[in-house]
Image 1 (cartoon, rainbow, N blue to C red):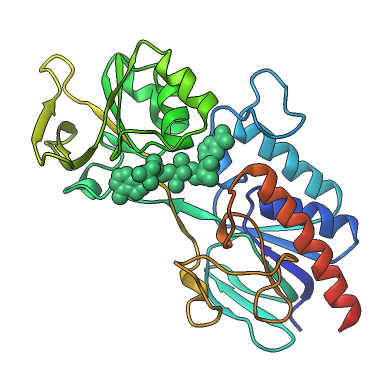
Image 2 (image 1 turned 180 degrees about the horizontal axis):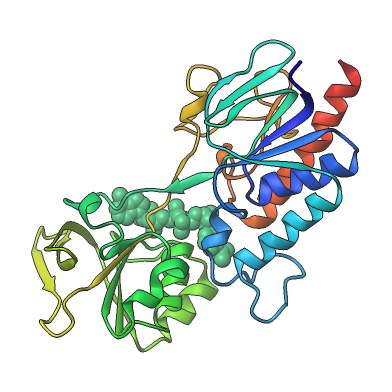
Length: 312
Ligand code: NAP
C-alpha cells in the first residue's frame, strides 16, 4: 500500500517551508515536494532586508531559505525532489503524480509560487542564457564591465538594477511608465546610484544578435519612436534582465480549482474551494506578495490542515 501522508506541501519557497515547519511541529506526517532548489523566488534574491528581524550582514534569499529548510528537517518533514504534472484533488485522498512517482495525502497545501513573466520582446526565447536573464543573483557576474538593461519598474526591477551595478558598466532601467512602482526607499537608492539611468515610457520590443545578445530595440510607448542600442565591438554583447512581474504556477490545477487571472482564491484561512486543499504564498490571490506574507500564509495553512484532519 502506498503511504498516505497527513499533508503534502507542494513547493519549497517561504510559504511551503513555513507550512512544513508548522506541520512538522504539529507532528503531522508531512511530505514537501519541490522540483528545484529551496527558497523559490527568494533564492534568486541577493539581499533580503524586509523580513522582520532580518539584520544579518550578508543575508541572501538563499541563506534565509536554507535556515527555513533546516527547521523543517529538524521537525521531521520528509522531502522529495520531483516535478508534479498531474493532480487529482477530489475525494478524501489527494493524489499528485510526478516524474518520480505518485504521492498521496489527506490534505494538500499548494505553495507552488510564481515564475518570472517573459519580457515580451521579439526573439526573447532565442537569447535566454545568451544575454537575457531573469535572475541578477545568478547571472549578474557574467556582465562585468558591460552595459545592462533592466525591463520593469517594480521592487524586483529596481532592487536588482542596484545589485547589477556591482558588475555592469551601466544599468538602464526601461520602464513602460514615467513613475516607478517600487517602494520609495528602493527608488531613492536607485536615483542616488550614478551607474543607473532610466528610459521612461519605454519597452524593449526586439532582441538581436548572433550567438550572444548584441542589440535591443526600445520603443517609446507615447511617441512610438524606436531606438536601437547595440554593444560596441569591443564588448561583443549586452545584457537584458526581465523583472516585469510573475505568472502563478497553477497550470496543474486548471479545471480542478477556480483560478482568478491564474491565481488561486482562498479564504483567510487559506482554504480553497476543495475541502482539504489549501493554498499559501504567491500562488494565491492576495494584495501583498512578500516573504513575510508567504511565511504567514504557510503557517495558517498548516494549522488549518491540522484542524481539518482532526475534524474529518
Ligand atoms: P511587480 O510589482 O508586479 O512589478 C512589475 C513591473 O513590471 C511593474 O513596474 C510593471 O509596470 C512592469 N510590467 C508588467 N508587465 C509589463 C510588460 N508586459 N512590459 C513592460 N513592463 C511590464 O513585480 P515585482 O517587482 O517582481 O514584484 C512582485 C512582488 O514581490 C511585489 O509584491 C513586490 O512588492 C514584491 N517584491 C518585494 C521586494 C522587497 O520588498 N524588497 C523585492 C522584490 C519583490 P507598471 O508599474 O506600469 O504596472
